[in-house]
Image (tube, helix red, strand yellow):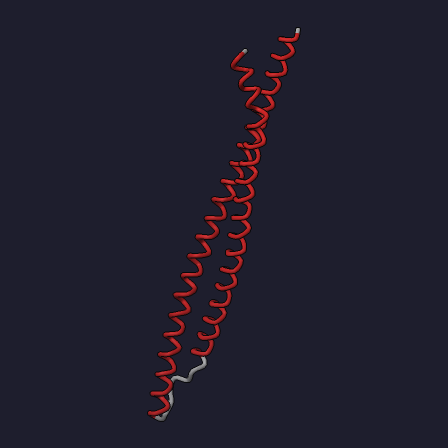
Length: 146
């Protein structure tokens, strides 16, 4: 009886704190998910921009004539081609980095969603345990009265 009395005295203070703490954790996880989704969207936009620029450069390179008669024109065309190739390589690197970042964000988002769902299940389990404990306490109190 003393043990149940001490637990019953602790229960009113413990429940709001525990539920408040779990709500705070869930809120933080949901904020993380929203932030990661926004970052993922931004990453996809960067990827699209880089891909568009890469496609435009490739189209420009396809349009460069390959047989020029004048030596100066050929040198100029070769320099333009090398510069375009350097830019294209930079864009490919940026695209690879953006893809890696996007994949990392997607994995983080998936992990946080799973963690959030686990926390929701834990809250549900704790609520069920609390309800069962309260029923036990009520039954014990009713037995003491009788």
